[in-house]
Image 1: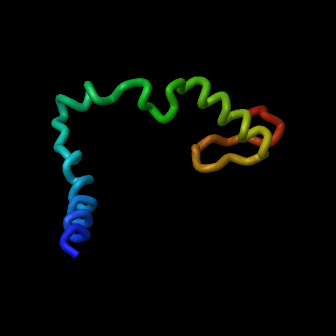
Image 2: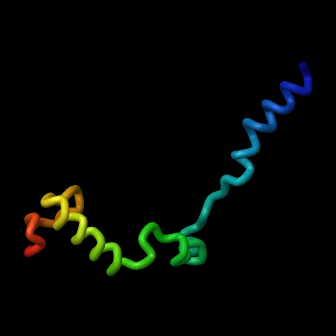
Length: 71
């Protein structure tokens, strides 16, 4: 019973070890371009425009236009 409690305690506390406070001056070092959700903003916008034109709708990105692709 005791080894089970130790394993559960370690499993519960292990994620907390990696938590640390990041100071504002350190955030620039941690914000790498490779970590961006969309590394190339122009390509992302082009793909979104294409998707909106094909769907004949816009969804949540604030753009407007119709199914013909002419905005």
